[in-house]
Length: 140
Image (cartoon, rainbow, N blue to C red):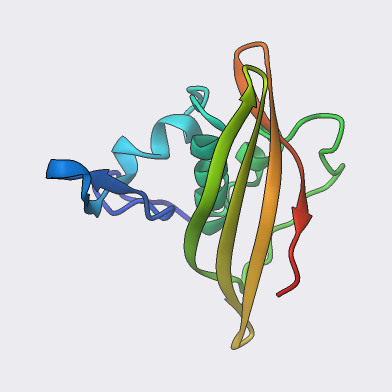
């Protein structure tokens, strides 16, 4: 699946408007596209958002490239019938210069049935790049 660079980014990140209020959704070119094209994501939150967008856009190579080798599955198949409905980042924090966490809820629909993935993900920075390591799932 391709995404127009001037379309709203699938991750739903909003621009900051005047006085710190949320603005309009960022366009893909100003949000996740640079990471998908090879620039390292600057924070665990940016990486997590770009990984969500990669699920939406069907980019398994990006997902594998940003998954830490110690936990990356040997095969990754994306379910083509999954319709991603939205992402809510609940919390993000740096634990130190090399470790971070992001808690999120991703909503999807498969075969007409709604799903929620609520996870606190762990990230590690190696060689200047952030990688998804693993996460703890919360009950739906």
